Image (cartoon, rainbow, N blue to C red; front, side, top):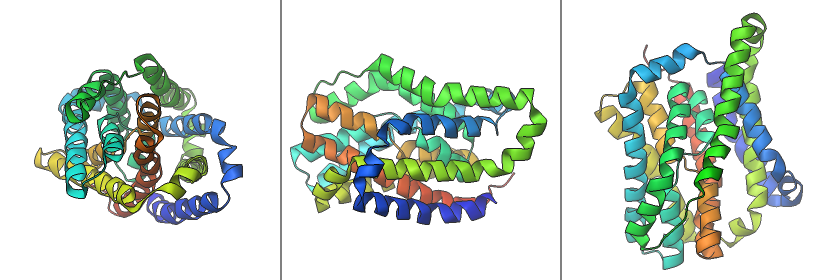
Length: 304
């Protein structure tokens, strides 16, 4: 079922995104629903996990360390490369660097699930990369663009706890307390998750419709290339480091899918609206590319 669902996911995402681009107002009005909807998705993912899944991750911390190390080297390096290959103007370059320096996005957990990745590893990496962003994001921004950026550390950690950690733990607790009923609805959870994420992406498109319309070709090219380099290099380097297939998929997704909302917020706070454009476009594109990648991998179960 997951493979069939993953195949339907990209067309659903694209159709709703196109609808939101054409009629942004009703989707933008649903902006306050994004966080509750993501929490609902993470609750559903928690219903599919057990303490044993996280115990397995903690028994192999090498994968977490590898994934986080790749996250904070591949994406900043890719940002530097994209800026030079495309000869980006300073404002766009600033936005690309902020995207490359930020933590992993919450949607990466859902995409890892649909792609038959290691979901417990995905959730752990998201939490770790968010905690480390307090140090690494300002350092990378200073190194690549010579600017000092203050990271809202407390807000970030609260957001990750609220959106990812607490709902997953709640779902696991429900599974432990009522295993029978949970197993009966488990088959429906991927469908529900995919539908909710598609709606969230449409809302993001609606909120960014003005910026999307203003996006120039170099910005779009920079976003697509940056994301592609992150996904491709993340997977290839993970496999070279002898990560298993499911974990390599997860690491690729965690590396390539960024917390672009944070990049937008920082760009608006410390720089200019033009510097926020790469993050706004990235927030749309990485969900589309992630859904396409999930559709591809869902049809190819990793070896046991």
